[in-house]
Length: 68
Image (cartoon, rainbow, N blue to C red):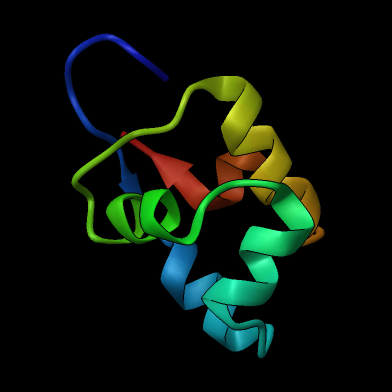
């Protein structure tokens, strides 16, 4: 998931559909709220390890959130 470009994602859509605030996701995934916001807006693409933490916290797969 690294390599210069950013990937599209459905993080915000999945998070809000699950009724989880960005603060709750941050606490559960141990990823900062600021970084999560960067991911949601497409400004950052997380490394695979971080993407897995986020996906696990949302009970979904990395592939479900992130796509080329």
